[in-house]
Length: 79
Image (cartoon, rainbow, N blue to C red):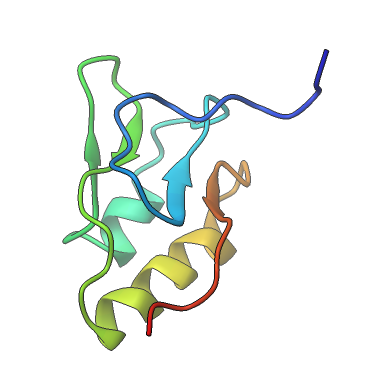
């Protein structure tokens, strides 16, 4: 059994995602409002992967600033 937190199923496919460790603190939504929102379960999820350099920077900021380390990036920068 893995100790890794599960990715929330609401995340759209792509390299950025939110795990079940989310506290619903709104940090990711504040720094990347075009990419994160609340789901029916009250937790944040990625509803849109970044489509610009600016959005990519904002999503990286969400990864860095998440107090629970629930926002993840498991891939390389989009080309």
